[in-house]
Image (cartoon, rainbow, N blue to C red; front, side, top):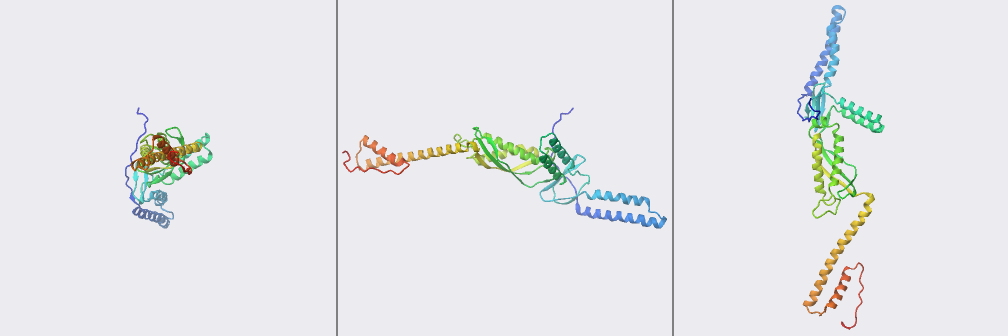
Length: 343
């Protein structure tokens, strides 16, 4: 016995007829059926007082057959495709835009819609979903069935919601991303996943959570990628992971980019104070470095130009005074010594 494994489908092109010649043929069939109906009555009554039975029955049966025939007409817009399914068997995909005619018995997707509606009703009955959500699921399934297995090939945008996750260091953060995607393989999108749109949404959220847990928000080690400082690298990693996750649904990711990144509200104030403290420390380091350079330059200039000769004690006092002046937060008001230098 073969194991119950998931079969992978691949898109194949399908051939359908041009709709305009088939429309002319359908009109001719309708005219012929109406003519046969009128002739069977008129000629039969004139000849024997009753309509001809066989032509009359054929003309009556021809009308529902003609109605079935015209249901094979369908149109496709640019960047739109229709998946052709005949009695459960995949027959190919039509991608050419225009007016077409195909087998009237090609499935219109009603089976998938009924299954989705039944699943929604079952979930409602078991309390898994509220009634409103179940009704929305059934309504969405009905919209999908009314499109006759049509799939849009246009680029779509998924603007993800803000997610609350933990970064690499365990800090709770809020993150969101926008994903631009499109269907590349219609057979995989239709048959390998239950609902490819919901699949894209779910996998995008899962991939974003995983990527956020791999990197720290900021303050990483030297050359370490962080969410805040390396947005391009993080977005590229997110796009790569989404491409791998969505490949089984026949979906290709055009772009994935972070749109929101912040600490969670419960730690935002603490992290803000931390950032402010780090900014003050960095500024102080720069100020001290500059002050030391200026003091050293001043001492060298005084010694080289023989302006004044200072012993070590006086140099220490001068350095102390200059460091206070250069590193102080408030304006310095010096006391001028009016006496002698060594008085």
